[in-house]
Length: 180
Image (cartoon, rainbow, N blue to C red; front, side, top):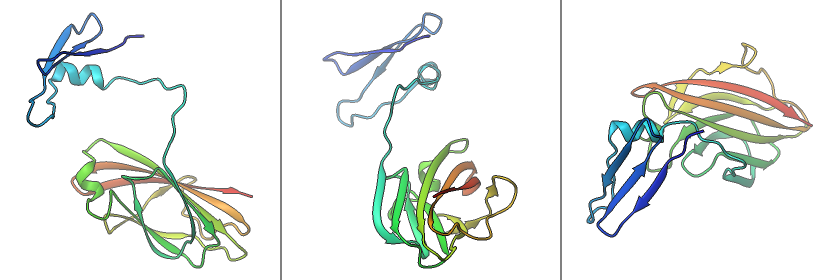
């Protein structure tokens, strides 16, 4: 297993000591902006696999009933849990935030996975339409078919992996799991 050591000094430089084969790279941070440009060698070091023992995800728990169009802000949450019974079928629209598109924050070849937990009462409501930044996308559903109804008296878990394949072009892999 290789590691990366990052050390700073008072001159505004940060040294990234990478695995022996990659050598040592120095990145200078401009004092006025605090931003950093990475060279290709450093990119290769920083874009390797990461190992986590545990991590947390931001979950929004809301006494909200799914219905109409739901704007899912991926920039502030990984999981959204609606605890009130769904009041109708719904459209889910993925965006970064009310002020930024998902297209503007993802680059081609990046993906994000999010979950929408919906409490379902006796009426079998479901997610019928999926959008990214207000444009409809037909997901590829686990098992090959979109759900035709929700699961009564349960919590339906919708998992979406959104893959950016080009400018404003996305492939979405979707799955519905029932928890009762």
